[in-house]
Amino acid sequence: MNPAVQTSEDARRFGAEQVEHVDRMNPAVQTPEDYLAATSLVEALTALRAGASVCVLAGGTDLMPQLHAGRSKPARLLLNIRRVPGLDAIGIEADSLRIGALTTIAQLLVDPLLRTQAPLLAEAADHFASDQIRNAATLGGNVCNASPAGDMLTPLLALDAQVELAFLGGDGSARTRRLALDGFFTGPGSTQRKPHELLTALLVPLAPTGQVARFFKSGSRPALDISTISIAFSARRDAGGLLHGVRLALGAVAPTPLRARRTEALLEGKALDAALAAQAAASAAEEAKPIDDVRASAWYRRELLRNMTRRMLEDVART
Ligand SMILES: Cc1cc2nc3c(=O)[nH]c(=O)nc-3n(C[C@H](O)[C@H](O)[C@H](O)COP(=O)(O)OP(=O)(O)OC[C@H]3O[C@@H](n4cnc5c(N)ncnc54)[C@H](O)[C@@H]3O)c2cc1C
Image 1 (cartoon, rainbow, N blue to C red):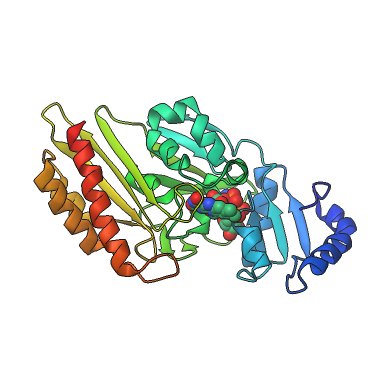
Image 2: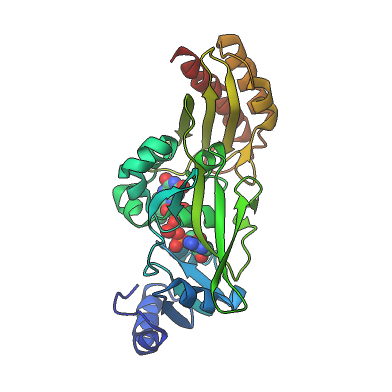
C-alpha cells in the first residue's frame, strides 16, 4: 500500500500508478476502485453505511494475501481504519479488560495490564507468526477473518470474551452493540458482524482469583505455521482444588472454533487427576469434527487433540 494514499482524492491521484504496479506483478489481481483512510470512528462508520461494497483494512496480513491469491473479490472501497484514534488501546472498563480492535499481536505480548488480567492471550500471541507479522496483525483482524485456525480465537473463547460492534445511528453518532464471542462465528470466514458494522473492541472479564489457564498450538513450526490444532483451557480453581467455570476451546478441528461443552461439563466442580484428564481428553476428541486437509488428516488431528488435552490437563493437575 502506498503510504502517501490517505484519502479517496489521493487514491485517485495515486490509483493509476498503483494499479499499473500491481498489474505488472500479477495481472490477475484486481484492485478496489476507491480508498479511504478514515481519521475518526464516525468517518469510518459513515463509509461503512455502503455495506458490502466496502472492505475494512486493518493490518492487511490476511486481506492482502487473499486479494493477491484471488480468494477475495476486491470491494468498491478499501477502508483503512489504522488512523482511527483509540482503537488500539487496552484498558479496564467496569469488570472487564477492554482490548481495542487495532491492538496488534506484538502489543498483546508486552502490555502489562493484559499480562496480569488475561495472560492466556499473551501466551497465544507468543505462538503467533513472526515479529514482522505480529507488528501489523491486529486482534480485530484475527476475529473478523474468522478462520477456524485463528490463534487468538480459542483463548478469547476460553476467556468468555465479548465483541463490540459499532455502527452509525440515525442521528449520525456512533452506536454499539455487544455479543458473546461464543456464537459469533457462523462458518469459515463468516461471522454475525453486519456489513455496516465495525469491530471496535474485545471485552474479557478480569481474571478471577485462582484462575488456571493453558494454551497449546500445534504446527510443523511452532510459531510460524497455521495451527494444525489449537486448544485453550481456562477455569477457576478453589481452595479445595475444585474447578469452576471450566472452558475448553478447540481450534482447527471444525468449521468454526468451538467450545467442547460436554467436556467442560465433565470437568465442572471436580478436582483434576490423571484419570479425569484422560476421560476429558477422550471426550474432547469425540466433540471435535476435524477434516482431512493439506496440513493433517482428520484422524491425526483427533489423536493429537486427545493427547495434548490430556497432557495439558495433567499439567494443570500437577501445578
Ligand atoms: C506470514 C503469515 C503468518 C501468519 N501467521 C498467523 C498465525 O500464526 N496465527 C494466526 O492466527 N494468523 C496468522 N496469520 C493470519 C493473520 O496475520 C491474522 O489473522 C491477523 O490477526 C489478521 O489481522 P489483520 O489486522 O492483518 O487483518 P486484515 O488482513 O486487515 O483483515 C482481515 C479481515 O478482517 C476484516 N477486518 C479487520 N479488522 C476489522 C474490524 N475492526 N472490523 C471489521 N472488519 C475487520 C477485514 O476486512 C478482513 O476481511 C498469518 C498471516 C501471514 C501472512
